[in-house]
Length: 428
Image (cartoon, rainbow, N blue to C red; front, side, top):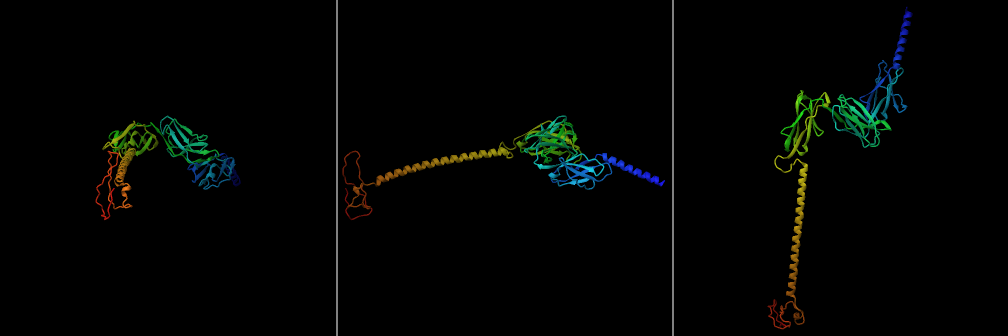
């Protein structure tokens, strides 16, 4: 009996090995990457090879195009850690068991951050009614050959939503819709080149696509009314019949803030206040508010009716408000122009007055010189005294009778000499 039992046990063991070998031979392995197959430059990624068989030793291969690179050694049986990654780590990976399993499907490991990030925009806007479409446009100053669009849902899981080839600097338009709750979320786009398909640019800035219309609309009002003077405090109140976890205030499409309703209380509230501070003309515009729940951050209510807020004038006088930089700048410019004209006018008046005074002085000086020349001028014959001129002689006046053409001789009356002289003086 013992030989027969041993034979049966040996046969069963061999059959079991063949069965496990057959199962392992046709079992499809799977390969995954944690935290993501898109790895930023310089970070690490862990590749995991999954199998339902009790096999514990796996091999990891990297394929670069048609060339299969040498086997990579694994750690902790089925885990392979790569990094800090560079452009050489980018490529396609597969894993397999040493003997019996078939290789897994290839997994593409992409290294991002190699090129400058592109830009992304939503048209007609990031708020989309349920059932409508939205277009996400990716564009860049770098001449990418392809744009890739990634979507992050409310659970934080990234998935590739599409790829689009482009030429030159042309943008890529991705149409999303009809919009559902699963379509809402955060979107980013990448760019790549044909010569390095596994090397991508840095991700674009995120754009949040919200789906609206799943809840009743709230109402929006302004404390004190929608007409506000400059300097007065402005507070907008968003109210709803249904309690929301969050309220959102938008000014012509620009999100101004997200206030958690109820303040410190964990309970939901029916309204939220949005203080905007002292009003300025820059606060004027069209406002709307929405409500949402924490469990669905990308699902908003219907839009409230628009509120037209107008901030004009001043609370104290009709003078321009000091809070308005444009008005202050214009007033300063006007004052500068007025001062400049006053300076120019003063210079003109000063120049004219100086010119008149100088002209008067010149005329006076000329008349004085002529008078002195007449008063001090003497004929040479009258200045000869004993054959020479003398500064101490008496002054002789010669009177001319202009009424007659004949000259007559007369004896003038001498003046008292300044210096008496004993010598006789002869007058002619």
